[in-house]
Image: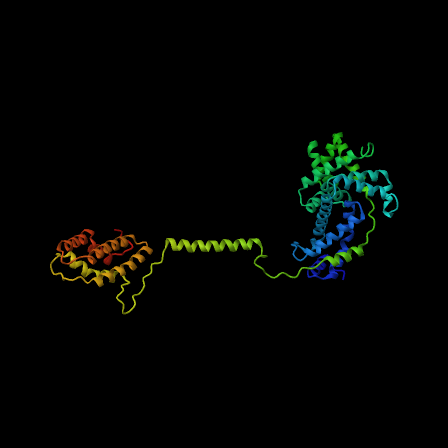
Length: 188
Length: 237
């Protein structure tokens, strides 16, 4: 069955596991990509991916989707909230500085062996990653949605549940902070 | 277009979402303003660096993730209707309606009390109708008010007076419930007279005369006639 997503959503609402799996297959890459680019490591990204789908499927029956075709947008929004919650929870237990150090250490360690570390070898990429990690959760999410997920300002506002003005303001501030974080010559 | 406004349009310009006129104005401003051109270029450059920094996303074990998701998801059973789970607006509306109906019922009882006229049971000396009561009272009042001392019997039917006093309590209760103040005033006067008669000694002509005077002063026979022939709702004495 290759039917459109809205049909799968109807079946999933009725508790059909096959339909849920199909929806997962269709959306997992997009959600994982967002989660990885926000979290910066595979373990956290997988946690966010799982949280997102567990939350989505558990609340699918009582969710008030205007139309079943809006499932992807709705899922994206859940993913953003899961990602923000994930780091909020971690920060509650860990000191911000410790977390930042751990993230930076993770970036350093990626040089060693992981197959995904090819791009980290580039010095400028590493500096940008460090800069991103120092941004606040919401600013980092705005940058990820804008520059990694290629969303337009209106789409970011809808996904994060805030105004377009607020998104623009956060994006300007995030980019200004990133510019400061980057070594002279890189961001100039 | 001013520099401050340019900031509002930068992202829309990057997304190609500006209308033709706005786009022309924007580009015209850029040509004339090196600061804004530099600002746009800076945003482009940092954005580009950010994109380059995470161009690749490493693979993940999607099957393992699915197994975890499938194990954790428990589709909720279809919900039965429950008062406590129904939408909040429905509960509010039901509460408001119940409160409104209760309020109307209380107000109706307070402002428009029911005027109940109970039918007199057969074979009972109890007088439920005010008119019947007045008819029963009339001979007694006449006996004392018309030429006291003459044509009067030597004994007082005290049992009958007691019965009329008991009957009076019922009529007062009903008048009070109907908020009929003029009738209440008349019944008060009748009660006073009946109590005097109940304690009267027939051998004492002076007291008998005083009761006759009291009846006349209070104007009881006249007011009873008014109640008998006029519509009580419009008479206020």
